[in-house]
Image (cartoon, rainbow, N blue to C red; front, side, top):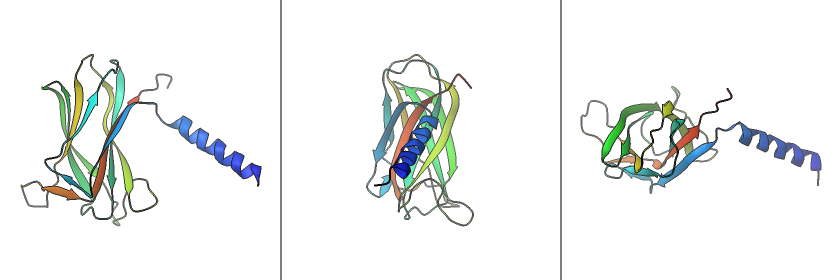
Length: 163
């Protein structure tokens, strides 16, 4: 067995992990090949101290996703009170039709910015709700389901104060 390639691989992996932002929270909701419009992805945020954070949305799609972009409605709530609501549009494929995001096989994962340097409030019962708002061009009616969206995630990352 060759030890040098193994040691080099381990050192590269450790350095890549060290470059990632520390996550305060990360969770996923997985779907069975499609994201139903009635199915909000809800993430309960318990025991997180008030501080500046970056809020990220992760989308996992496969080849069955029919669009080159994605529209989402993202809400931050305190109980039933709305603290933040944004309609977001993200590119899912480049001009040549190649999927953006990371992944080697059929599923690609895209890390999408929602809010940068957001001051998380001191509150109990915080939750994030994500729902899709995609539709066919020229149609006002949202789709009942998005084929090819197999999962959606939400993460809060600490902001490195040393930078």
